Amino acid sequence: MALSGMACSIEVLFTPAEFRALRDRDLKHTVCVVFDVLRATSTFVTALANSAAAIIPVAEISEALVLRQQRPDVLLAGERDGLRIGAALTGGVEFDLGNSPREFTSAKVAGKTIVSTTTNGTRALRACAGAQHVWVGSFLNLSATADALAHCRPEHLLIICAGTGESAALEDVLAAGALCESLASRSHAIGTHDSAEIARRVFRQAQADLPGAVRHARNARCLLAHAELRADVEFCLQRDRFALVAASDADGTIRKEAVAGRHEPAAGNQ
Amino acid sequence: MALSGMACSIEVLFTPAEFRALRDRDLKHTVCVVFDVLRATSTFVTALANSAAAIIPVAEISEALVLRQQRPDVLLAGERDGLRIGAALTGGVEFDLGNSPREFTSAKVAGKTIVSTTTNGTRALRACAGAQHVWVGSFLNLSATADALAHCRPEHLLIICAGTGESAALEDVLAAGALCESLASRSHAIGTHDSAEIARRVFRQAQADLPGAVRHARNARCLLAHAELRADVEFCLQRDRFALVAASDADGTIRKEAVAGRHEPAAGNQ
Image (cartoon, rainbow over the protein chains, first blue to last red):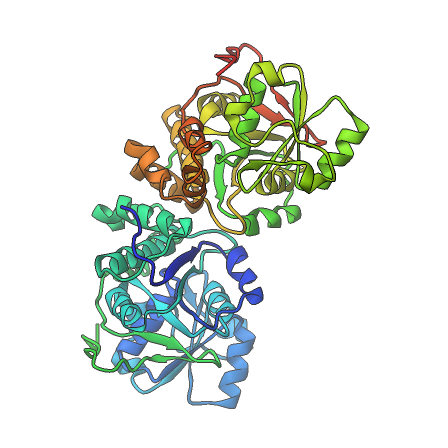
């Protein structure tokens, strides 16, 4: 199970402490893929698959409120403690959506720009500023993202696990490992960073029962404890539900990536 | 394979970026175990098993030279690019030992204090300043360390992977996972940090062929490429060769820990 081939190197960052250090690195020839599987990046990918025009991730509620004042047509999305952000936290503004990907149906999001508050996801995406491409990864669009990487063949692939608080999140490392494994099976170049080997081995160990493994992750335990959020865990572990690549622009806005000669997103509404 | 039981929590730090952030944490009720499997902590444990009086780890050659001036009886140990540090790097001082654990025989080290230069190992140990205990881990003394933890039952166990440069090292994460697994099999308390679950799953995936897994690690590849260092990899992966606990004092000096009612170190010379 060596990671073989050398056309590009693959590195995985497990925690915010690691991705914060990216500000000192030149990422010009690097493609970054960010995973915040439970639930930010899964939600963004679902929204784009359901024809949202764009996602603007922000770290703070106050940033979301400023954007709404500038552009009254945007939808506001985000949760605190699992619940959609309400008027009590915002001085009167009710958010339109929480952070469950199952809420982001075509009926609600088609054609809309969504401002979404998410702490670790936003920090991880911002840490990649200056990269050749910044792609938003999830189990939901894993093969499409792997296809795009195989096509783009970057010098360096950096897979960033957004984590929880300051710590590593199991589900993000599993997704990182799944991406490494998927690239290997395409005979795409795989480098020799130990971090990629670690992620790949965690995924191989867990892949026969991914829901069983993720059930022990801190984020999953929180979601499984809420009756109305429980189904999000299973939803976010669906492999390749959507055949789309989601890219973060230089200004941090996330849109569906137009990939020449590639299949279009599957299944609109979920 | 849930990590079950709650008497203490277990957390694993994978990289220097993470353990540098420890300076902001209160570690009073935390026991730290540091792994730098290839080769610093394996070498320290071997030296103590072979009756060295103490190890003083330092990050820089210049620190080692200052200590030698203060205490001419110390042995100097360390390598650059796999070779023992010679007069060209020190302005005339030949180091007594390199960094291969196989050099640290009783004949050479019994009764001696050894000043050892190692970058990541020293940084990792220093990051634990203020902890309840700081123990030096390796595959060579894994069960003895796990026994001591089961006896001590700290509120919080922090397993620190020294890594390579700024990155995670596979062999350190495997040792961290082996320690988590060993504690679980003793019904010792295991907490619920995802990082411990990640390390444990990597170990479980690799344990049937640990040398085969470690062969892909960056440090192992460097050692395996040197004819005279190749055997270090196999040496450092030996499980439980020495039944000793190695503890770092408040001033950073590492000594054999006296553990009441416990067996004595096995096998002197190797």
